Every structure is written in structure tokens, then in C-alpha cells.
Length: 341
Ligand SMILES: Nc1ncnc2c1ncn2[C@@H]1O[C@H](COP(=O)(O)OP(=O)(O)OP(=O)(O)O)[C@@H](O)[C@H]1O
Ligand SMILES: O=P(O)(O)OC[C@H]1O[C@](O)(CO)[C@@H](O)[C@@H]1O
Ligand SMILES: [Mg+2]
Image (cartoon, rainbow, N blue to C red; front, side):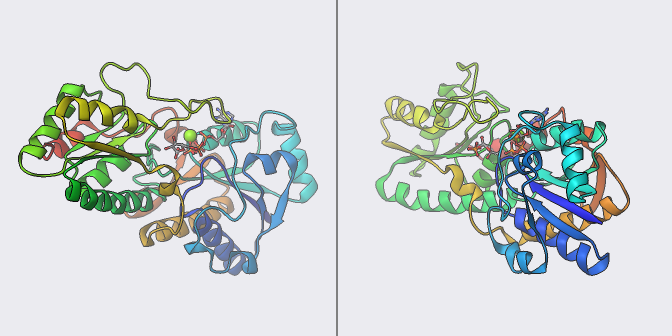
């Protein structure tokens, strides 16, 4: 039996560990064969594959990115669509697909599964915004990177008596901001789930400065001030036509400086959070996901994705992960807010 693996959507540390986990389990335990589709759904649409055997996956679980590439291609556009994909798979002797991606990739996978293609999903995203799984791999690494960056921002902020604003990823949800902000001891955490006024932010900055601290503010890219209807975007659209976010920190910093008189600097961490070596936690989670995805293929659990519940890997229908994002609950924000200011 031959299985095709694809990675789609934004890359994320741990993708290679999923590929390795799936391939090693499949070839050592079940005599399966694997190919990788190059660049996400693009490779599926084009029938563009590379062999995935032991030599290709050797030592890759510690490597960032994805060895088979990724894209934000829609498999229903261009030469895509279920009939063409089914014909390509039959032609290449590929029985099923393991699709590793976020909610967009899984939405596409669901539509293809409904049209008769055999697909099992693996959830990925640094944002940790997928429902039906406790954690996605990549999140822990992103939090680690953001925390280390904030620790560094604090020493330079302390030296100059400046307010430092750190902008982290998080298009719709503030999980990276919440966790890294709490870990780094930020004086305010601004997340997309909670609109906030400049007055509130100014108060937190002043309170920290009054105690002799150099204020550290963490803001998720999707955060909105109470005066804003949409998240700040000045970088055009992505391949799927959505606004590219980023830059809210640069909006907040001069405003904070003008209101408090405290010199303020902003740093946007951007794609640094998605690059490089995955944490040990993410490598383990990703490897377990990859192995469980092979089990799911053998059990013909089409239209389902592997997920983490507590410490157990389970299977859930795609629709459980779609439609509703896993946002930061009010209680988690309130818990963190006790430490603001
Ligand atoms: N409902 C859909 N039907 C068909 N294709 C879709 C659908 N939703 C998304 N896609 C395609 O899947 C691609 C991957 O989705 P998206 O760009 O949101 O990444 P993702 O898998 O959610 O990962 P990320 O965490 O980076 O957002 C999209 O760019 C788009 O081309
Ligand atoms: O620059 P790219 O790769 O299009 O993606 C950026 C987006 O991807 C994510 O990293 C993950 O969904 C978001 O936080 C961010 O808005
Ligand atoms: Mg997405």
C-alpha cells in the first residue's frame, strides 16, 4: 500500500518529525510505502511527488520547516478537484493521503474526503487555534522562542528605562501571546479575543514604570484596540486572499510614548517564531501524531484527524476541528490579567 504525505499552510516546527514518525512506523511495522507531495496541495494537483523512505527521513525530526515544502494552494482550483486528484492517485498507485495542516488544509481535506478521496489529517499550527485537540505541535516551540526574545528585550529595556513592545503571531487567537507573556512576566498581554483601550494599556505601562520596572507589553498580531474594527494590516493579501497581519506593535509604541513620556520601542518577532529546531515537546507530539496517522490509515478512518486529549492520541472527525476556533477563554485572560501593570 502506498501513502502520500503533504504539508500545507504555514510551516511550523515539527512537520518533519510527523513525516519521520509516519514513515518509520509504516515501513518498519506494516511494510507500507510513502511518497511526499511537494509544496502542499500544489503537489497533489500537479502529481508532483518525491520518494519518502528511511534515507529521506533519517535525522529530520530535529529539523525545522518541512522537507517536502508547503504552500497555500487550493486543491479545488486550477487543474485540481477530486476527479483529477483521484485519477492522479490511481495513476501513481497512491491509495490514501496524510494531510498535515491547519484549519484551511483540513477544510480542503474534508471536502476532498466527502468527494471520495481517502484522507487522514494531522493538526498543525503555531497559533494553537484548532479545536478538538489540546495542543498542536509548533506552539510550544513558538512560545519558547517568543519567551527567549522577551527575556532579551527586558535586559535592553531595563538598561535604557524604556517600554518594550513585543509583537508575536496569533492571527485570530492569543495563545502564543498569553503563554510567552506569562512566562516572560509581561506587564500587559494584548490578544485578539479582548479589545482593549489605549487608556487601559497606558495605565498598565505607568503602573510598571512607577515601580521602577521597564514595562514589557506583548501583543498578538491580530489584537484590536477598542477603536479598531479589523486587525491591523498593511502588507497586502496572502495567497488565499486574506489580509497579511503584522505591525500593530509599531502602532502602539508611539502612542504609548506620547501618552506616558516613556521612550518606547517595538519589535515584531514574525516568522522567527516558525523557524528552526522544534522543542523536545513538539518533536515527541509530532512523532506520535505521525505514527497515529498511519494507524488511522490502516483502520481506514477517512475524514478524521489525530488529536491530543490529555496525554492520549485520539481520532476526531474533521468537522470537530473546523468551524470554531479554539480561542483563549475569558478565565485564562482574567487569570493572566491579575499580573498586569
Ligand atoms: N474551505 C476550503 N476549501 C478548499 N480549500 C481551502 C479551504 N480553506 C482553505 N483552503 C486552502 O487550503 C490552504 C491552506 O489553508 P491555510 O492557508 O488557512 O493554512 P492552514 O492549513 O490553516 O495553516 P495555517 O495555520 O498556516 O493557517 C489555503 O491557502 C487554501 O488554498
Ligand atoms: O506569512 P504567512 O506564511 O502567510 O503566514 C502568517 C500567518 O500564519 C500564522 O503563522 C499561522 O497561521 C499566523 O499566525 C500568521 O498570521
Ligand atoms: Mg489557516
